[in-house]
Amino acid sequence: MKSGFIAITGKANAGKSTLVNSLVGEKVSIVSHKPQTTRNKISGILNGEKNGEEFQAIFIDTPGLHRAKNALSEYMMLEAGSVNEGADAAIYVLACDKEPDKYDDERIRALACSPIPFILAVNKCDVADPEFVPQRIDRYKDVEGIAAIIPISARTGKNLDMLLDEIVKVLPEGRRYYDEDVYTDKNMRFMAAEIIREKALYNLSDEVPYGIGVNINKYSVQENGVTEIDADVICEKKAHKPIIIGKGGAMLKKIGSDARFELEKLTGGRVYLTLWVRVKPDWRDDGSVMRMLGYDKKNLQ
Image 1 (cartoon, rainbow, N blue to C red):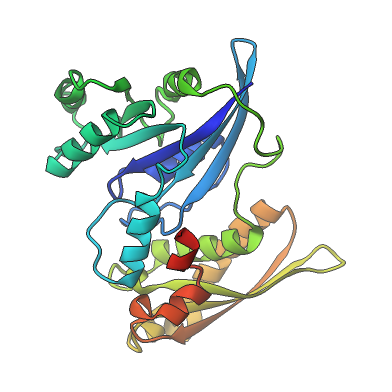
Image 2 (cartoon, one colour):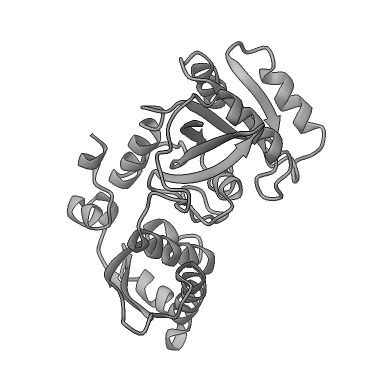
């Protein structure tokens, strides 16, 4: 069979997480319209068959490339920077609704010169001006080392079958790294924290989510099948706490309700979710809080 690890990289908000979710067909990474939603390196696993040959593609979703402003951002950039280590192929996701810049050019050319096969996915072709798509392709069509340039829409699924064909072509012969019924390398505690954070991103105003973290205090499955989750929603400023709670607790209830709905789909059973709001001043530069939330630089070494 064919199998391998495919690094998914690109700038913040290019659509990397949406692409991984669409390829795998399961909710692997949380998504929102806000940049820097993904903070950890997450693997999405796809098992399939092409031309009579089985394959297992392990897509590694990473934080979007951006300029680090605090210790959390530095951690995210280290996660993103380490993605090519041990990868068998790479995909750079380029949002075609925005003009590529010098950073895109440099990163794409660097990947084209790397020893692993490299595919350029020109994303968001469903929302970009139609004339932008050929312009983006023309910009990079003569760069040596690009195995394929595929215009796609990760959101609608346009041309993802074409992209998958190219991915399988460059996968090496190998073994099955994960069981066929596994679609991510993350455990349920991690997924629960991410889903709660996703719902906070959707419901809260722009200035709050970047300082939001989620810590799972308790995750247990009872004998009756009910999953009990107790979690802290952590914010950086005292002024943010009443915003997260909302008038009469309405905002926190909405975040909890939205999260519980998705968690019940994930677990396949009832979920009892309790949320608390804790203030940890400037936690994104506090090593002890970051480690508690799973953002530990030592784990990257």
